[in-house]
Length: 86
Figure 1: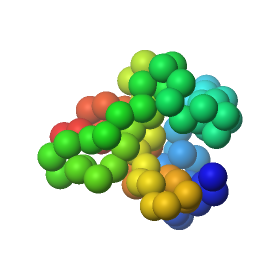
Figure 2: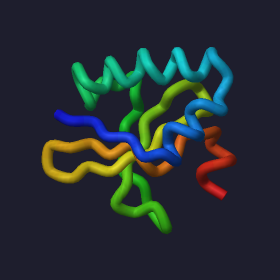
Figure 3: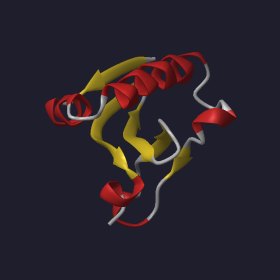
Figure 4: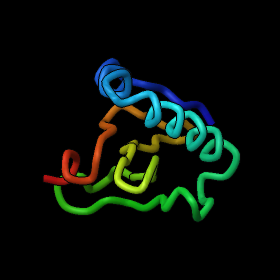
C-alpha cells in the first residue's frame, strides 16, 4: 500500500495542534498495518463526499482519503467533524 499526500492535506495537518499531529502519525501506522482495525472506524462517506473514506484520528478529528488501486491518497482533508462535514 502506497500513501500519497497532497499539499493541501500537509498544510492542514501542519496547522493542527501537535497532539493531533502525533495522533495522526499513530493512526496512520495502525492504518498501514490493518486498514480495517475497529479503532480507526474506517467507513465510506456519503453525499458530496461519496467515493471517499474517513478514519478517526481522535474523537472529533477525521482524515478523509481516497483509494485508487493499491494507493491511498490522503489529499482531501483533515479536521474536526464540523469542519469537514458542513
